[in-house]
Image 1 (tube, rainbow, N blue to C red):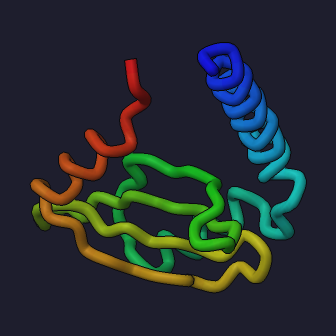
Image 2: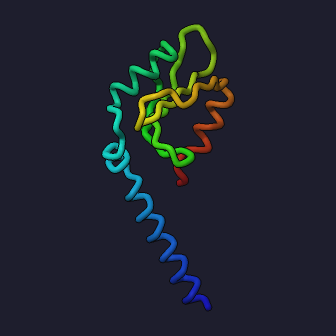
Image 3: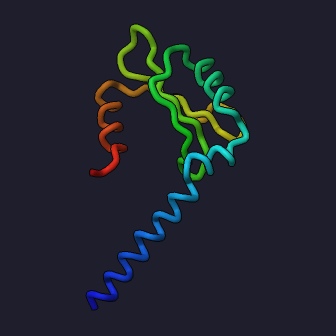
Length: 111
């Protein structure tokens, strides 16, 4: 029984690495129709400020550029998501400093 569980665990690990490889940054960028500079311009048009972080990711099945933008004189950050296929703003949400900190912890890779 232990050998069976070990094989299942190994297949699961290998399977997840294959899934990760399919979603690598290069694979995501190859799928995007909108260039990063164009998406960045759209995000800053929605929220003028300084981009603190940006990422191309798949969220809820949709390929998006996600930007955390710091607005001078305003606490927290503005998160703007731009569709990487159409170039349209998908969402715009304000995150307080506490929400931002919690999100960074939850997205940190396991050690």
